[in-house]
Amino acid sequence: MYRSVYDIKGFYNSRIGRVVRRVLQERIREIWPETKGLRVAGCGYAVPYLRMFAGESERVFALMPAALGAHPWPQGHSAEERNLVCLAEESELPLETGSIDRLLLVHDMEFSEHLKPHLQEAWRILKPNGRMLVIVANRGGFWARADWSPLGQGTPYSAAQIHNYLRDNMFIHERTEEALFMPPVRWSWILKSAGFCEEIGRAFLPMAAGVHMVEATKQIYAARTDKGSGVRVVVRGRGYVPQPVPQGFSIL
Image (cartoon, rainbow, N blue to C red):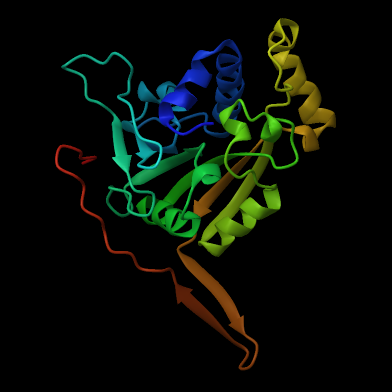
């Protein structure tokens, strides 16, 4: 049972976890090939996928949920290096409104206890042109049944469910990709064939994907037509009160 971030960390330290990380890193890079000068944040347990942005982005940091706990990151950072992890309540993210360019949610929605307020907070901290990438276990995939992995814990979702949650919380769906077609087994020959499995799965078996990768943008204005009057009404997006940044943790 994955009850803490250390359990998830242990999975990514295993051989199969390292293969999963490599596969998903490559797919994330296809979607976000360039983050130079951008502020990148991760929610849930995103640290295995944030390091690749550290050398090019303006700032990179991770928000780990209070329910799962947190550990320092980068691993083995010196006294001169800053710890880039903050423990956060999912419905009160400790970042200023409109401060993030790219937001990565991994092992996040599946474990969320208050999903709607959490997505509203994600909306709040994103810049108007910001992008969010949600990686969620596929409800119909084999990985959702692998309860020895973090992808087999929590609540998996269908792509349609994710789209609906994002739409209801004022996100605009941009794209959906399917990933992780390698079956959840520890056999050596399967692990060595992960790249081949990815190619075959993307071409012929999208329904067998282990995860959905859904990219969305922040919707600022929602336009609707009042059918009774024939007048097009523009509704301003929800207003949010900025949350204070804890002492010793600033993105400015």
